[in-house]
Length: 540
Image (cartoon, rainbow, N blue to C red):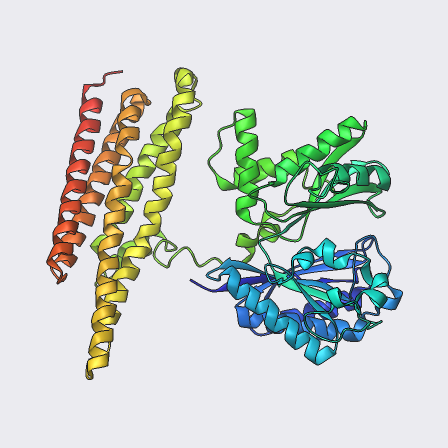
C-alpha cells in the first residue's frame, strides 16, 4: 500500500492569476507530489491548494510553495472576506493511506521548523500537532487576525512554536498541523451577509459564546457575501464528518434559514471531499426517501442533486472526490484484463494466475448471477410485491460479487510473495531465519486468502435460499448455474488450502486450519444442495 499524505495549504491570494499559478507550479514540479486541485476565491482573496504524496514529498512541496509565496504575496496590502493571519495562512497535513496521524504530526513539526528557519517567520502548531490547550483550533490561533499580530506575537502565551516572536509585516504568521480530513463546505443563501452570519452562529459548535452554544459539533462557520455569484454563503468547516456529516450541515442551515424566511439554493464543496463522506449523505437520502441504489455513481448523483452541489459551478466527481483523483492501483493487473487476455494468461507457461485466482473468479460469477436474478425480479410488475424483499436480498450478493473479484489478484499476489520468500538467500544463520519467517508469513497469507473466499461464499447461502424461493422463475437456470459456480469456487479454494497446509510445520496450527477448511466446505455443500433443491421443486 502506498503511503499517501494530503497537504492543503491556504494562501492569502485569490485574485492575481500569475501569483496563483506560480505557487501551483512550485507544488506541481516537486518530485513525488501530485497537485489535485487549485481553488481560488476572488471575494475571499484566498486560494486553497490540494496535493498528495509521500510524507517526505509533501513536506518539500509545502516548502516550495511557501518560498514562492514569500516572494509574491505582501500581507500589508491584503483584504478579503476570509479570516487570515498570514501569506501562507495555514498548512495542514492529513493522513490518506498507509500513514498514521502521528506521522502527519511529524510532517507538520518538520515543515514548521524548516519554514521558520529558512524564511524567518513565526509558525504555530495547531490541531493534533498542538501541545498547548489554548492553541488547538484555527479560530483560537487566528483571533485578532493579521492586524492583531503586532502585539499578539510578543505575548508570552503567544510565542510561536518555531521562528521569531516578532511581527513580519509582509508575511504575518503561519499555522501548520495535522488533522482529520476537513471538508470546506458552503451553503448558498439568498440573503445579506449579516443574515448568513446569523445562520452560521446558530449552527456552529461555538455558537454565540459559552452561554449560547450552536447546534452542530465539530463545525466552524461564518457568513459572507459572494460578490461574483451575488449570493450570501454560510461558510462551513466540517472538522469531523463522522460526527457532523455534510447533509446534516445542509439541512440545519436550511432549517435556520426557514426560521428567518430565507431561501437556501444549493451548496458548494470547496476543494476535495472523501468518497466516504459523499456516500454517508447518499445513505441518508436513500433512507429518508425510501430509495434503492447500489451503483456508486448513482449514489453520488443523488447527493449532487439533493445538496445542489452544481448551483454555483459544476461538481465533477472525478475532480472533486479525492479517491478518484489519486491514481487507483486497487484494481490489480488480472481483473483489469479483458476476458480473452485473462483466459490466455491462465493458459500460459506460468503457475500464476492459477487455481486460486480462477476459483475466486468463478465464485464472483456465481454471485453475479445471483445479483442478476435479483435485479430481474426487482422492478418487474409481475413481481412488484417482492420489491421490498429484493431490496434486502440484492445488496449482499452485489457486495460479495465485488469482494470476490478482488480476490482474483489477491490470490495471485499471495502465491508470488511465497515464491519470492523461497528465493531469499540462505547462507548465514541470520539469512536462514529471515527466509524462514518470510516463508511462514507468506504461506499463512496463501492460506488466508482462499479461506476468505470460502467464507465469503458461505455468507450468501441464506440469501440465495430466499431468492430461490421467490425470485423470477424465468431465471431458474441462471440461479442454478450461480449456485454451482459458488460451490465450484469453494472447492477450488479448499484445494488451495490443502496444497499449502502440507508446508505448515506447526501441527496445532495445521490441525486447526484443516478443521476450519473442512467445516467451511461442508457448509458450502449443504448450502448449495439446499438452493438447488428449492429450485428443482419450483414450478412457478
